[in-house]
Amino acid sequence: MSMPNNTIDLTVAVIAKQCLPGQVKTRLSPPLTPEGAAHLAQLSLSRTLATVRLLPARTRLLVMDGTPTAGDAEDFTVVHQASGGLDERLAAICDGVAGPLLIIGMDTPQFSVNHVAALLDDWGTVTARRDAWLGPASDGGFWGLALRQPDGALIRGVPMSTDTTGAQQHARLCAAGLSVGMLPELRDMDYFSDAHAIAAELPGTAFALAVETAAAIARGVVLTDEARP
Image (cartoon, rainbow, N blue to C red; front, side):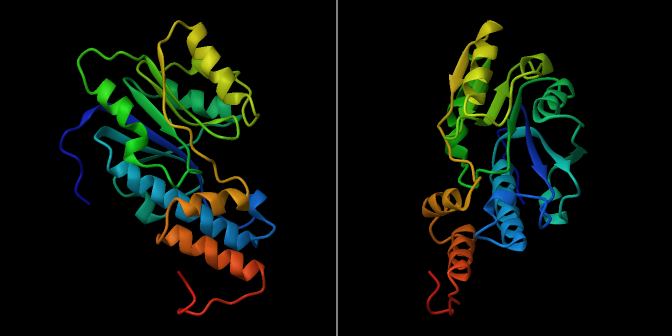
């Protein structure tokens, strides 16, 4: 795959989990089978990584719990996640990177280059206006966090997976005296209703087709080729 030529001093780290049935996106089951949930998780991860390959970043990290597929690892440096809670694992990424860093998750397959356009415009200049950028999630968390000067202390101890995680992370950054820009809000794929809503934003894609097929199977309907969108 051809890489962007206009690279900027930026590391993009995708934090992800190997998509094994029964071990990933378990809240999609029911109505999905564990295998169906793992398949949607894999499509979400692969779409996210494909988008990150389009970003004009100098370095790309795939921070994995488990082993990525060969296709997912392409153009990425694969590193293993640290132990501990999510705040500790995110903090470890920050402590291991020197220079501007953007961390994103694997649960927003609708993520596009446009969603980080403001960040790229700002940090692509000599005098950046923002020290940090935060991408809020509709469930109260966040899908993306960017720091000009990464420091694990800015994340470590923030309660994760709550409906106030995003607000508390924003408050932590502001309390440290950082100027924080806000990226567009995105919806995480936590439940199958989320997958449905995200699929509506991605018509005609493999992800949307997989969601429609999974929904049909859950209803006891088998889609023929003619019936598929």
